[in-house]
Image (tube, rainbow, N blue to C red; front, side):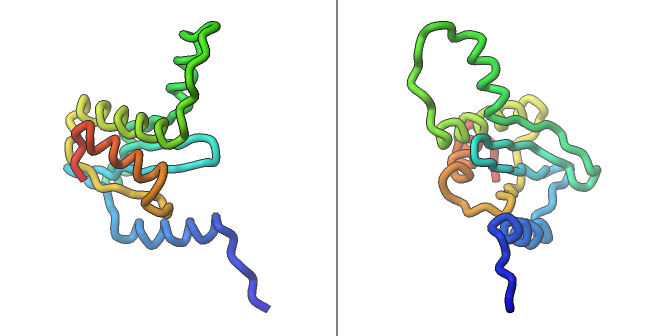
Length: 129
């Protein structure tokens, strides 16, 4: 009897296959993405040095906006909009650190929805990949 693989294990298998080809260097670091059901995380890593240069998420943005809004109700952003915002913030932070070109590591996820929005947000803000 065959055991069926879970979605998570299938994603990890795809990610390992992708990581064989996608390697971040000092000149062109790797933009990595992790997606949970509620949040999205992205960062830039130099695989040659074995260091994560920085990472951001939509959780950080929410914690700062909660303090500012008191009684005013704003229209909730969709997860896709939040992902695009994370991509824009990653690109801005990378530009500040002198990084213009990266390789994109989608983390085994399909390139659509929140992953695509994050990538497009980073591209619109000037990151090249």
